[in-house]
Structures are given as C-alpha cells and as structure tokens.
Length: 212
Image (cartoon, rainbow, N blue to C red):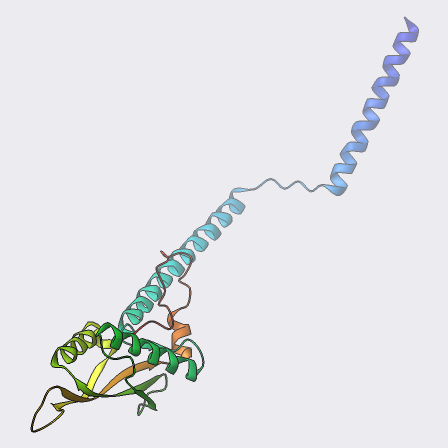
C-alpha cells in the first residue's frame, strides 16, 4: 500500500511539473489575446470599408466597360490595322478583290490603293481605292453597286462615273470609281481589344483585321 502511494505521489509530482512547464512554454511562445468588443468593432468597420470600396470599384469597372462597348460599336465602320502598313493594304486589296468576285466581275481588274492621313486625326487614316472597269455590262455594274452597298459604312463612294464604252455603237459601259475606307491605327485597335474587367460580364472584343 505504501508502495502504491509513493507511485501515485510520483505521478502527481510529474504531472504538476509538466503542467507548470507547459504553462510557461505557452506563455513564452504562444500569445493569447481574446478579442474585445472594441477590436471586433474595428474589424467590422474595416470589412464594411472594404466592401464599400469593392462596390465602388465594380461600378466604375461596369461604367468603363459600357463606355468601351460604345466605342467598339462606333468603330464598326472602320478597317482595323492588325499589323504593318503593307500587310493592312494587302488585306484591303484582297478583300476588295473578293468583293469584285462576288459581283462576278472579271478577275483581271486593277485595284489601286492610296493611303493618306486625315487632318487633325491621330489614329485614323483614309485608304482610297481606285477602280477602272472597261467594257462591262450594266448588270455587272449593278452587282458591284449592290456588293458595295452590302458593306455598309465600311466602304464609301467618293466618285463614280459610268459612260458608254463606244459613244456611237455602245454595247457595254466603262466605270471609273473612287471609294474610301477608314483605317484605325494599331494603338486604337489595342485599346478597343483590351480585356474586359473581371467583375463585369465578358463580351466579345472587336477583332483586328476585320473584313471590309
């Protein structure tokens, strides 16, 4: 019985030593700070401030996205420069040649392109398309007029003259025309193609190098 008592005392002493050691260890390396009402109130105010800032940021992002979409809609009549100047001119030449094929005009028609800056415009240039048709029928001319009309505002007539191919014995007609296409600079294209804000619904961006 005395032996059992000694063992219990030893275990009790060992337990007390462990508790004291644990207490000092926790006090030394672990800091306990129970949140007070003042601390909780401060945290709540911080969260409310962050929520207000987030709502303002979302509203600004939505307004900015609406403005960007409005600019993208205004830019639809323009040709988008997607690379070097020579490449853009080649694309315009290619697309206008496609238009002539859709009008069922002879494939050997010569297209002349000239680009010029518009006064007071930094990011917009004008491409002038010169077209000369000889000995074509009025049906072919009407198809050409319809194809240009289908392009909407991407192509605009600046000059068009139709006359008989032979004043004495006309069989077909000759057509001399000038058309214009507006080209947006690469910086303007990059601005319009920027990614929408993450908080707003992502819409389709305007694609560079859009067809006439």
